[in-house]
Amino acid sequence: MDHSFSGWKMKTCDLTRVWSEEFKVHSYEMGPSGFASPQTICQFLQEAANNHAEKLGYSFEELDRLEQMWVLSQMSLRMARYPRGRETVQIETWPVSKQSNIRGYRDFTLLNSTGEILGRASTMWLLLKQDNRKPLKLPEELLDLCSLGHSYDFLNPPKDSNFEDSPETVQEFVIRASDIDWNMHVNNVCYLEWSLEAIPAIFRLKNKLTELDMSFLGEGKYGSSVLAECFKPAEQYHLYLHRIKDKSSGKILAQLRTRWEPKQVQQD
Image (cartoon, rainbow, N blue to C red):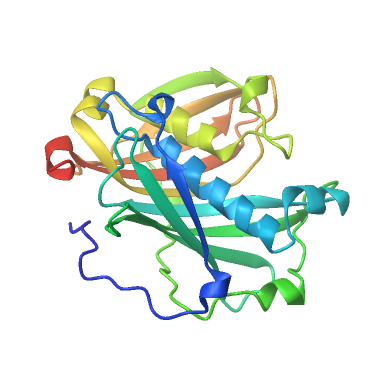
């Protein structure tokens, strides 16, 4: 599977609608191999999205004043190479029009200092009313901000039918205060962290995550116990499926798919 992105070019678009921001990989954001962790990459993407939303007048603070909130609903990430510790990553992000007045889409490109494409991501967001968590129509002025440029269009969350077998491993986690975000529910990066933790450690040490698809279906609450279920499809060594569910209610909070490659293939 080609993760080099060597032949990919972003179509011309209105550059005033593209947000560009640099992030440096700190020592506490690296994994055991000295590269940024997948969690770190997802945090960079969300920070860039938040900063662009603030620039456009739709920050978390402004929405909180209106008793509204942004919620990440889906994310797909494709990585050609993870940045090393101390390396600087440039993230470009822009809103994308998908003919929907309820779902907001945003895409990303990750580049190194020489312009090499390290990865790309596609996301879908919902604007919710704080009190009842019901989706709101996106304001017309926000829809007008959508870029006329490139859309990756590779959102591909796992489906319920993918989880027909029994999980290979199950780990239990208690939601801590530090797991709760601005919207008073579990930060979505925690779902990724719990899912990766449920994968056998020897596999994680020998392989690197190259493709990630996540779908967020429910809210985790402080003090609740969640189960991270890890599924291994037959005859697909480098593919895992993940499901996070509330232990007491059985409600599914998130579903993920991770695809991996041997580390020496990615880090050449």
